[in-house]
Length: 333
Image (cartoon, rainbow, N blue to C red; front, side, top):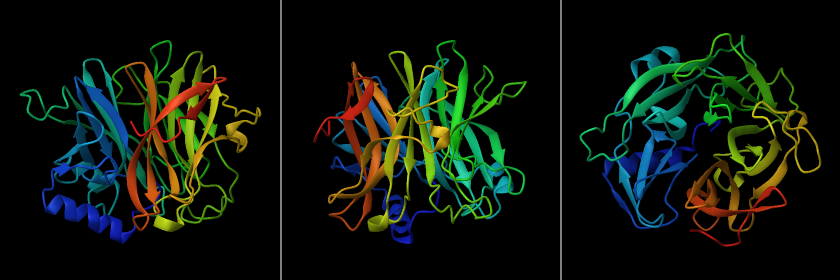
């Protein structure tokens, strides 16, 4: 998530937390930048929010909201991002080595004063005696006037050789990929970096004025012999003025090069459309992909045209047609 949420949406989140509203009997729960994972018979959604927002569900229709991951900002974040107030962006959840890995982003508004952090837990079941989030601090950081990339929107992918990689980034010089070490807590040495997607921009513009270079929210998913790189073009977080849309390219190697259906490289602005806004949704984006019981799903947020552009959870079934992801019409399961 690139920019701060609109004030009205932020106040909405604060109201939810303040009222301790735990039951949300609505498929379209209020989320931003969602990811989903299944533990046992329970689905968990993590998303942008104060301390990271968490929901759970047994059927992906009726949701329970849980307390945030962080009840107060981690001390290392306060030092790294001056003025940070606890609003954490774009978590990424996955299960490896017998525990859950939750990467997340913190950032100053309109700058690439940003960091990606990590917390782990042996279980997502808050009732378990083993439930405890353990912070591992900073994984990587971007610094103004040093880096032309932005350390936000993390996504972990383990390749066919069991090598871990973290994709991340937005705007600036686009989407990056860096190899992690075997602990998944730090960059591997010697360092190995790749640029995997970008849109041309004027380097003199601040991040809050990217021109036509708006790209963010990478998510890499392996299907058959290809790695698929999903990104979001356009602008999030603007309610009815949001222009978010999801794009995709693929590669036989996790490091790329990724190309779209027409063979245009994503590093040269390419990308095939997955889904964009319409009369019902002003914009849709910042997706994750998850497979449950042999079926793949696209998980993302959309700005609801029937509810003043509020951001809502959407989950759509993916059909793989001719090697490319296509959404099943009106499938919300």
